[in-house]
Image 1 (tube, rainbow, N blue to C red):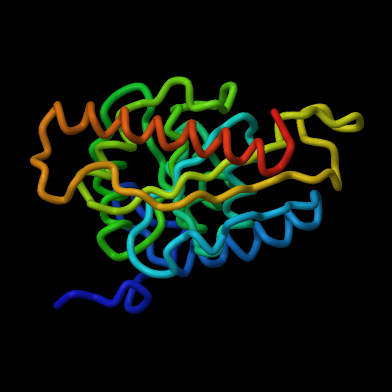
Image 2 (cartoon, helix red, strand yellow; image 1 turned 90 degrees about the horizontal axis):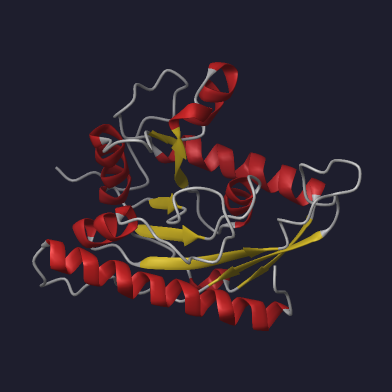
Length: 233
């Protein structure tokens, strides 16, 4: 029997083993925490959140210029998010916390079948999978994309929603490792799109074409977001 995406799921236990598909409760708790922290420390301005589908699987693809981008998206997204997070962060209390709020560890140094299975499981139950397709923190301009996003999009058939976080890379005066406290950070959601036609076979050529299509959409959205907000960082 197919389970309803919002019922009958485990609630994101801190003891969740790697490879288990996290339920929606942990990510919902993470969203509530994120809302409190992000709106308490900064002044997020969210544009276009209505563009995210309200139900069903979604892949949220964001630019990544600062470590605060992930928490900022968790605290401003209209739906709870399960992000793929580098495995190195899952150490000690932080690792337990991340598992508890439904985040997914991934080994970036080699193909990680466990992470792939977990991520596809999130999409199969109608959840939101968050990915920084550049693979690591950088300029946040989508200049280089890894193929992982295309794989998840083609394999699951889920729409991709581009999102741009602008203003997070500026260092603060009191705490240079963070954006200036109480500063405005813009979060701009774009229109959902499909990376490939549902009828296309999952071949290497399809994945390559999907990666190119995704990159064009993400770069175009980033340009639109910069024009809409008047920001270039």
